Image (cartoon, rainbow, N blue to C red; front, side, top):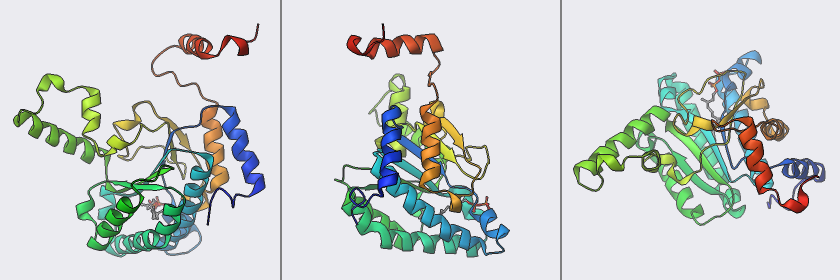
Length: 272
Ligand code: FPP
């Protein structure tokens, strides 16, 4: 199915309204939280929450691609999640395998580029292979970059970067004086992404939970009270709308930001 031509006309209007309001976030990252609570409140097994959560993944990926978001990063399984009961871990791995097998063709034909971050060697071999195949198949796609954070933690990626930098210093490829923020970022697994503009967390919790710790230095945070299985494209639009109403100052003052904006608006568009 072509996501651009199959778009619902009412949805198209909402998307166009958002686009006309300002510069959309280039990179949206999501902590998909609350699957377990959603299921427990319905007297269902926790895995049912993860299963319905996949419907939310489908809808949010599709809407992000339609609206022209460049990067979407989903926290699907943290390094800490390995400590969950084995039945839940196995169930999540099966769901992930099913998602990758079922969705890859549609993602590919809709110009989505698949990427992943995290300690992939810890994942089952079948999933490692599916991810490698998906990345290879979609590597030349130019639309949405969909990054799955799997067996990932922000601290793990930072420590890994320190190890790699240390090796390069020891080999004489770089010297300690070369280590800048830019160089450090280039050693992180997120080095092909831009930094997140907007991080959404569902279920009302207000924590980063070890997600994109370095990258979120200046990212905006939006908390939705909905559980992830209930979160759909309209909730994504609400989050984007909220983001578009914020002023990003990156440490500067509001007056400085206003001066910068008025300097880039062509004189013909300025109000007298
Ligand atoms: C957090 O909810 C969610 C997870 C640990 C897993 C998220 C996985 C999916 C949505 C499905 C697979 C993903 C993809 C990309 C195919 P929780 O279980 O911590 O909920 P709780 O806090 O209510 O217990």
